[in-house]
Amino acid sequence: MDNNLNSPVSGGFRAPGRLRNPYAILAVLAGLSLVAAACNRGDEGTKPVYKDLTEAVYASGSIYPRYEYKVLANADGTLQQKLVSEGDTVRKNQVLFVLEGITQGAREQAAANIYRQSQANLSDNSPVLAELEAQVRTARTKLANDSVNYERYRDLYRQNATSKAELERVQLAYQTSRNDYVARRAALQRTRNQLYVDLQNSRSQYVATGQEQGNTRVRSFVDGKVYEISKEPGEVVRRNDLLALVGSGRDVYVQLAVDESDFGKLRTGQEVLVKADVYPNKVFKARVRKIYPKLNKVDQSFRVDADFVGEQPDAYYGLTVEANIVISQNNRVLTIPKSLVVGNDSVWVSENGDRKKIRIVKGAENFDLVEVKSGLNEQSVVVNPE
Image (cartoon, rainbow, N blue to C red):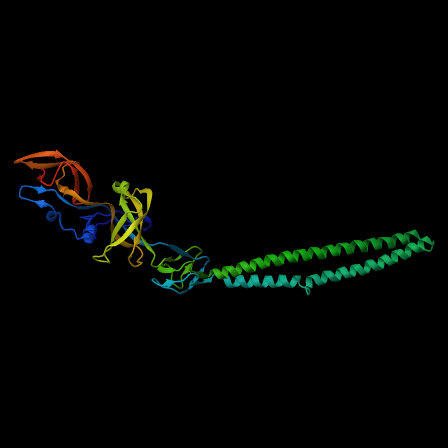
């Protein structure tokens, strides 16, 4: 692979590199010989030959797991345990990290104490309610006595056995007792209601604190592979800090960058031939799955994703690759070396010892060859440009 590939841009998306021969992958796959041996060259020029011509677009990029996600801390604390390492295979819901929450134990203990106290305050043996209930019973007893006393004085007053002033005094005592009883019953009910609300609030707080405690156990959401770990035991972490990068294990795809000038040739479903330095002399096959319409203005390239077909490389995150996206397969077409084409559509030919420039109609082309649809035949002698 050429060492002059552009460096990765944001998001791990590689910019298109430039090889001396971007069709080198096709050469490895098909065992193509050099153009000098592929065409009929004579001392006076080159004759067109019929051969199979593959037209392709060069791309560079990287291999990534199809599904990946960032494992984030969902609580503040200190990383107490790291239960996995880079390269480990993990299962869904497996615990990856254990955090020790900052003041978490104290908050949980306080919430538990408040919850227990709230339960006690509303229980049958509640000291708060017991005191109020006793006051209600005392008020009820006093009301009953004052009621009997009031009725007795009313009878005495009817019999002219007591004065009106005494009757009014007893009546006032009765009314006061009745009002006190009603007020104490209302106070008891209000206290019950408030203690019930307090119990629900303290229960919610206790549950929430327990959930926060659960947040200190960081689990994997998927079956996959650990590609990177960002924190080590003893480090302080904050909520939403990155702990690790986890992705699917064997399920990978290739993310490519294609030059802007070649974008119009791309279609979903096109075959892609992928080559990586770590697999010398091996070419993987893939197909274009998605073409992104947004131009990366930094390197004037478009992103293309392709899925592997059949054998695929191991899941090395960000493995650098080069690729040829096959645009067309042309069987037995008349070809000449691309280096003999002058401008866009002309060549120099030799006829009866004379050199002249003629126009041709080109078809498919690759880095070395170009298809000639009209203007030349197998007997034509194409010479180097003057």
